[in-house]
Length: 205
Length: 205
Image: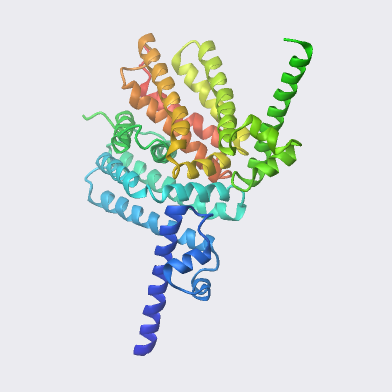
């Protein structure tokens, strides 16, 4: 590839990132519906043509933003899992990470909710939204299985335990968003995970 | 009160109910934002003057609908609590009721999410939304305390246990909405509550 082609590709990538950043800021500040493509283009300083070159629809753009946020969370979880000595230690350290989601996610979560509420009326978007849920369910299922195999967890049902962990985390994030000053939500997440672990950890022998 | 005054009051009550029903149908079908006051009036067959006589804003109307739904749920929970012999039995039967929320609530839940996502940007609505959360938290806290007092539950933290129950229920309802065909959600709720109970129930003596 020639120098000019590389520069062109760099410029295209920069434009893409600028559009994503402008959309993220607009969504967080005004909401998903209230932020139109024209508004995003004006913020990013790009033409509508450039926008549609990168994203077929505003919806596709939102899903890419969401994937980006979740990939960041996934990378954190994987790093914790890799460095923890046992599954209970990994779960306790992951709980501390969810506490960060409350602080970092404050701007994104309302947009998630708004988008989800629309998705419930648009069956074709469900698949994109249910995929991360199923991925986390499968991920925590595998972690619980690993804990049983390493002997730190009792022989609980990995499916039900993963469901409890995922649903409690989602419920707490939602509740923390609606009632930000109602509790120290990061602390509540750690307490709840401790309670779950109390019941599934094998008594030390 | 004369006969004419009573008739007038009945008509006012009928109008109020008709407006609530029309709004509920519009919200469920088209969403909260997409259903304007004019649309609600047309569906209900009332004038804008009549609407604003009953509700200062569309937001006030929504909050009244939400209160109505939650009162229905509260009444069910109280009836179960009153008729169950023990706290664990009450919690297992309540879990079966949450399964019904998935079926009945399908039309309402997207509107909840849409409204909540807006509320996150309007601090004055938070109070109205966080009140039910705090009420359920206090309610389940009292139930866990009763279970400890009657000797069916271990001496767990009532606050943390209530938090786990409420957050898991909210998380599962949200997940079930986004991924309706991903699982038999009513069954998942019962399994999750069973898992929680397994860990907090006192071993029979």
